Amino acid sequence: MGGMSLWHWIVVGIVILVLFGGRGKISELMGDVAKGIKSFRKGLSEDDSKPLPPDQAKSQSETKVS
Image 1: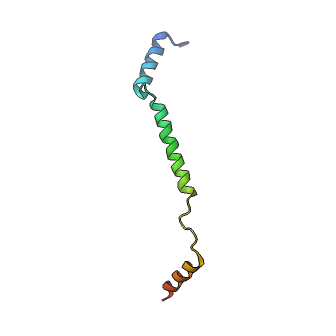
Image 2: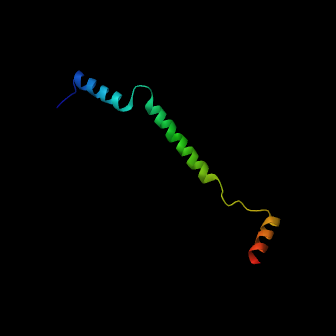
Image 3: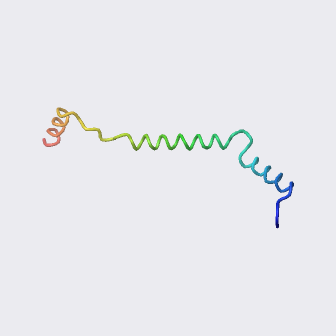
């Protein structure tokens, strides 16, 4: 139960290569996560209800009343 032999490390390495692939799939995954976070933050920072100029706000309030 003490240490791991060379064969254990070889098996662990093969399992890691099979799960994640050998060509930077982790970096691709992290890039996708970063893009998702950026778009989420952009969505939070955008204001959906931008204030209308006074003349447009007045005309819209008149239309709603009539």
